[in-house]
Image (cartoon, rainbow, N blue to C red):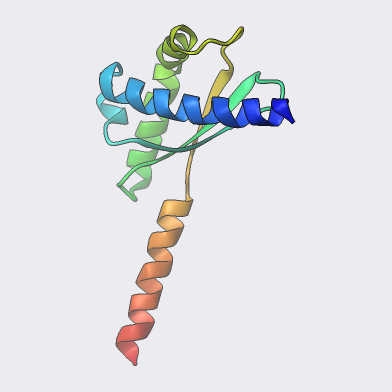
Length: 117
């Protein structure tokens, strides 16, 4: 039970800190406007999958952002290591959160249906 609580607490802490690091420390223009939407930490605390969203729907922007985050992951991980009181900082994997675009698409479809009636 305590392990589950610890993983959840660490996920929240990583989400808060990565948002802050992206805002204040990462100077790469490719990662401007990135919002961290969630973090999944493995049970052994070795890996953190960080979900993010961007405002653009263009595939080229998504690729640039992904490359920017991968390039900045060393700096982000180093910052996390100094900010979090854990023995070993997890490896970071960035994954685009598609749920925001999915929600937008559903909204557009509903508006289209509504305007047809």
